[in-house]
Length: 168
Image (cartoon, rainbow, N blue to C red; front, side):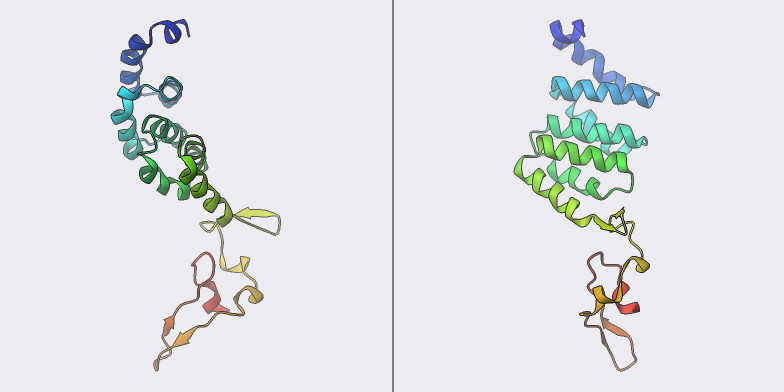
């Protein structure tokens, strides 16, 4: 930590090469330091991790670091990660957008949180919901139209878009 406090320039030259380290824990810790010290010279390398990182926890940390370094220019790059299947990645995107994404980031995270429903005491997102999670009452207003061959021409508009209402 002494190096970090007194030799910020030297710190930059030491941290960036460690983003290629084989150990994901090393990469994660390096990204946390890059985020904390706003090592802007690492922006391109951190952005590269978004497409290539295999560790979910490292990717989540990379999303936060990327937003910290990009002055909200990375908003559109990070937004799709709010729907990632891996909780560590979603968390990294949410925390990054809340901390560094301004009002747009806060609103985007809020919209994602609204999508998450609690059914029968179990938190479910639209990526986790199944047909049996819906009741017939939720589909009572579904306006399903069929053509002359009984093929559906207007699918159901259930909130998660899994077309469950056309099956009830």
